[in-house]
Length: 418
Image 1 (cartoon, one colour):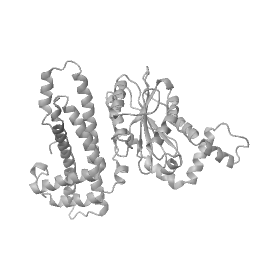
Image 2: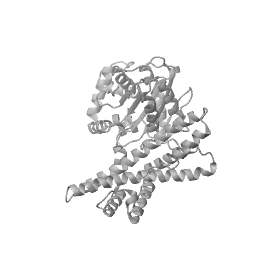
Image 3: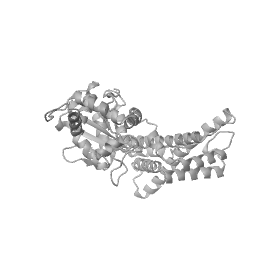
C-alpha cells in the first residue's frame, strides 16, 4: 500500500504496511526493524550501536539491548498474518527545535505521548498495542520511524484507506500545536469565546498560514521528505547522509588510486600488482578510520558473522580468530565496491577521450562509492542476523552433530573473494 499524505504541512505523517499475505513480508519486516535501528542517521541509544526503543508490554518506554529482540517478535507475528504498520512523523528542523525535540529522550517522550493516536485510527486498543521506534536526525527533516501492531489481531487487514493517515496527521497537529492554533484563530478574530474544539477546517487554514509565513522552510521540507518513500523501504541511496559527510579527503585518495590501476585487463584484487594491493588496503583502512558509519557497519558485520560461526565452533578460544576473519571478509566487500567504482571510471576514460573529471563529478563518484559500501555492509549484516536466527532455531531441535560439522566445513572458507 503506497503512502498517502496531505499537502506540505507543519507536520508530515506517512504510513504503509506490507501485505500480510506476501511470502517475503515476515523477513521484510524483520529487516525493516534493523534498518530503522541501525542505518546511518539513526540516533543511537546511549552505549549502544542501535537506536531502537518502544513498548512490548505496559510500563515505561524501553531501550532494547539489541534491535533483534524486537525484530524476532515482529517476524514471528508477521508469519501469523499480523499487520505491521510503518509510520513516519517528520518536522522541519526549525519546528522540531521549537517543540524541544533536540535529543533522543525528547523524541522518545513525543512518540510515547502520541502513539495512541496512531493506534486509535488503525483500530488498535491500548491493551493490544505494541510498538517500536527509532529517531533519525537527518539534515533538513528530522523524523521518527515507528512500527506498531495489534498483538491480538485475529483478522488480516490487507488495505488501509488513504483517509486514515490523513486523519492521523490532523489529529497529531491538533494535539501538538493546540495552543498555537488557538492563538492563530483568536488573532484572526474567528473566536470570541474560549476555543474548546479545534476543527479540521481550522487545521487546514493554519497549515496554509504557516506555509505562507515560512515558505523556504516548507520548500526544504517538501524536497527532503520527497525521498522518505524509498527511505522507508530500506532502499534509500543514503543521499541525505552522504551529503552531510566531509568527503574531500576520500576524493583525492580515490582518484590517486584510480591512476595507479592497470589500464588494460580485468580489474580484480588478486590480479593487481602487490604495490597497488597495498595502496587499496590502505584506502580501506583509511575509510574505516575516518568514516564512523563504515566503521560501525564493519563491526556489526563482524559480530553477526562471529555469532553465526560460533553456533558450529563453540570453543571460546576461537572467538577472536572468527572476528578477525569476519573483518577481513568485510574489508574484501569494501574492496569490491571501490573497484566497481574505479572500473566504471576507467570505462568512461576509454569511451570518452579525454573524459573531464570536474569537482562535481569527482564528488559524485566518491559519494557513489561510499553509498555502495554502506548499503552492501548494511544488507549483508542483516542477512547474517536472519540466518543466525534460522540456524539457532534449527539447532534447538535435533540437528545432528554430523549436520553441524557439514555446515561448518561448507562455510568456513566461504568469504567475499574479489
